Image (cartoon, rainbow, N blue to C red; front, side, top):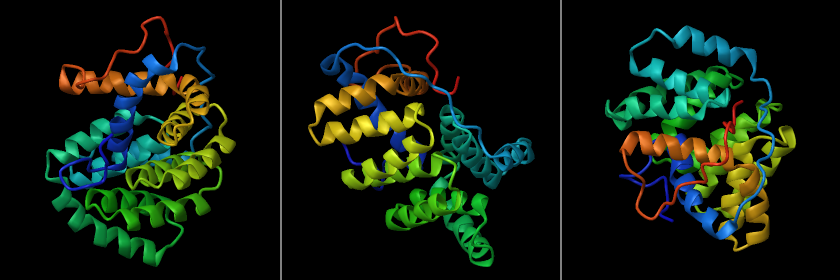
Length: 244
C-alpha cells in the first residue's frame, strides 16, 4: 500500500480512510466470509450537531472545513469526504495556509476549543504537517474523553506515517469507548494486516466490513470504476451501513 500524507496524495485525514479501505476491500478474498458486527455509534456530542447546523448554509472554505469536522465527529464519513473533495477543488493547501494560523490563534486563546482543534488537525494534514496533526489529535483525545472519533482519526494519522503500533493503540482506545464502531474495527484490521497477524485482521475486518463497503461505494461514485486491483465486496451483506 502506498503511504498517505505525502505531497500529491491525500489532503485530509478522511482521505486516508479511503486509501486503506480500498486495499481492505481486496483483502476480503484472503480473509474469507463472516458475519457483520453491530454498527451502532455512540451519540455524538451535541456541539457537533450545532456546528453542522450553523455551517450548513455557508459557501466559504471555512464553512466546508467546519462541516467536514462535524460530519467526522458524527460518524458521517462519506459526507465528510464529500466536503473534503469540494475543498480540494478550491486549492485546499492554500486555504489551509490561511486558516491554520487562525485556528492556531484560537487554540492558543482557548486550549479547550474542540471545534478549533479539529479544524486545526485537518489543516495540518492538508499541509502535510503530520507531526503537528498527530499532536493536535492526541490533545483532542485527552479533552474529548467520551468521543471515539478523535482516536480513530489519530490512528489514521499514525497509519499514514507507518506507525502501526501507535495506530493500533489509538484504535483500541476508540473501540473501548464504542465496541461496535466499525471504523475502529477497520483501522485495527489494517494495522494487524500490516503486522501479518491475519487471524486478528480477519476478526476485526469482519466487524468493520460495513465501513469498508461504505467507503468502496464512495470510491466507485467518485471514480466511476473500481481502483486497480480492488475486488468488490460480497453483495449478500445488506443493510450494513456503519452509521445505522
